[in-house]
Length: 75
Image (cartoon, rainbow, N blue to C red):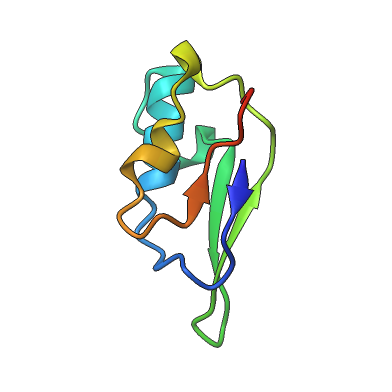
């Protein structure tokens, strides 16, 4: 997974998509991606665990409205 710094708007759709595809739950705490919003309002993405992208589809990247994530070949 490739993160494009500075593009993320902090909507957290990636967290929900990841947790749903990995754990069948809408729970950002179960996501392999974490969105952090700093005290200055800057948004940072963290991949806490590489995932297997269920069915070969990176739903987090597919659903990102600003294309801040990109699935790498073989993810």
